[in-house]
Length: 117
Image (cartoon, rainbow, N blue to C red; front, side, top):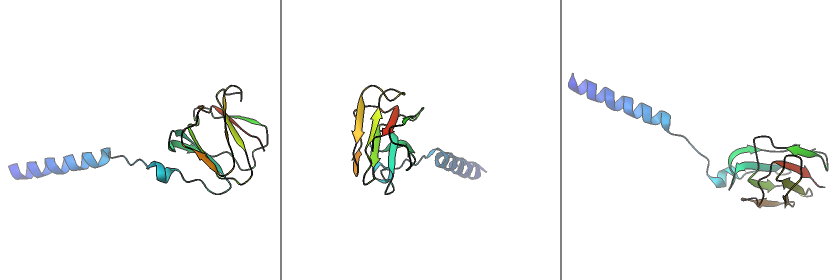
């Protein structure tokens, strides 16, 4: 009887431990961005939540990132320049991202973004 309780306790502990394990993608795996897209993450080094503006985003139109401020960006386009700006209305300090480039740690936390070309 005592052995049965011990085994049950061990199995319960293993089951509880298994439910508490969380898998976080490494920055290398999180840093994938399809060709022709711009991708940004809420954390530095391509961690946190991921988002991507639409490929047909109009040039010069300001977009607010809401609660998803950009801290790292990949521009995997061949001809589009993008800028991330500190203020939600596309004003304030800015950080540009040229085509085929990436930045794991934006100098400006981007609360808004705009396609420049």
